[in-house]
Image (tube, rainbow, N blue to C red):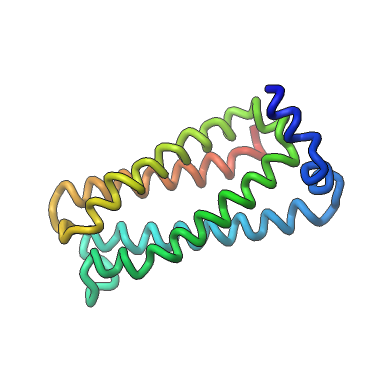
Length: 153
């Protein structure tokens, strides 16, 4: 809690918190990155089911989209951290924020381990590939829903 309180009192956090336009400005980038990340995840995961981008093999599609996934993830994490800093103490106890962070951690671990292994091989038509895609979509959906719920909890 002391780290959270310290973060909330830094000059950057105070500037964002006290500005009438800085928080929404940062949030725009956070939401745009979320949309881009969601698009890349859905595009690859639907390919596991043979839907969309049928002219590309799953490993090729995944490799082509990976830089966009990483860019959006980086923007999301940086902007999210800035938004968190501006309301650190409030967010620390927010159950929706905790839900989002739990599923973000799970989604990241899953994406960088299991999902990457399956997208690197031509396993899209297999039952296990489809299960991986469903888990991926569910995890990232929970991240988005948790983020959306923060303002209501």
